[in-house]
Length: 359
Length: 267
Figure (cartoon, rainbow over the protein chains, first blue to last red):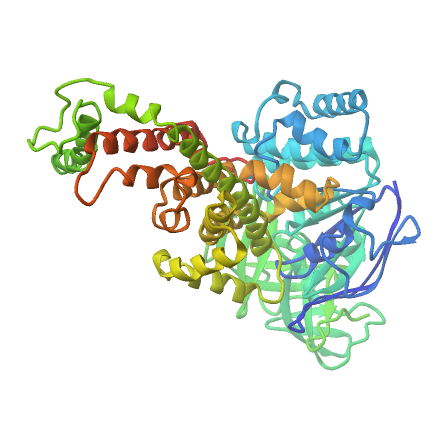
């Protein structure tokens, strides 16, 4: 186990492209950190710099307090699980897992013990003599994890390890990763573009965009208090609704609706962007006559998506599209007029220019 | 069925001269077979006996084996290491180097005979096995490099990165990951090198004037004279030359089948 510190880490390529800029991050011992963001956001490059597979252009990387920028990967205390699993095709499962230990001159009985233990915990005991091509995707994934586990490294790196699995298996393996992390207690850095993995696995999420960190924090911190529009819309499914509005005194006025501004709200100009999560919109199937009260949005149902436990209503509010997450038992039809109600504390306000959160 | 209608005559046309050589080899006479029947009509080992009893034949066979084997070993070793560098490292002169290797393949080998001869002469390598080995491996290497580089390029980089994370240095990586995975390509290049060296006639005939330094193709050709040709001995010699190549081909056949990388990364 070791703590990892990134100080102003950057990656610049020869053509001047900056893939990662100024990433500063302190990772506690045993912490599970998830780097998440759209493709090309620099999350994988950051992970590869921590692994030592990519050189660091500027900044300092420390492991257990020591600078490791120039330390080759094999001398860093890290094990890595690759997206493609990268199992050695000419070796059996046992050989695959033992390879790293053999290279580190671990005595043979010890190797055997560790491989058997890892195989046991991953349910691979029966498969130890198979070769990768004789196994399913899920099994290969387990071998890739086993190969990292036997190393007993202080730091685990995961590069989108579940993205090649089908949805059902991905759910199972996600639970397995979480269970393993608790059992091993190693510091883990996990890269994904899947916000569900990020939310469920992370102690802290690092959300990146175009090489820059947008926000670092516990999953629910990011979910409840996104610092900008990008974070707000990236996390959450269906994503947060964004509406244009004008600030008029202590009210936020949009197309056919008025919302109360939170006390002490500071906005740079009159125009703002509002963010409301779908689950914070309460569906009122009976729309009152005349002008709607403050906090009510007039909506016309566009599409109804019943998912069983809940129903997503995609509605039109004026010219803008808004999704509400309603109870599974709500009965509405497309074309119906209704109202959506939102409490003031659930309205996120963003500056339309800088896209940064206000107040 | 239609496909076979085409293939059968093609196979017969290909096999015809080969069968004819077999027929002549097992005939107890030196004259050229004049009838069209390619099937052996008699079975005599006389030609082979005469060949084997030639005191120089054993030595010439050994020459051929030595030259072909060492050419293969040297050529494949150098081609593997060079191809790996071309495939994985970016260094100044990489593109120029690859282009240059390609250019060397554009000239017919015979064009090189005279310059190579004077080179060999000044190096004192005429009538020496080392001379032939040097010439053969250098002519085979460009092709082998291209062949192997193409194969190395298909090996996923993540495999190597995974080995690096496992603690492998460049040598371990090459020896324990890349080479075992490249067996099919190495088998093909080895076979190619061996066959080139084993069958080559023109350079061997030019450089080797001493009968004791002959390789088998030179020996076999020596039965064809200006006035008389010992067709029986020629045919028997030709058969002896082709047998090792065929044996090698069968031995390497299972490695020639690709697909070793299947299953390493999600396919």
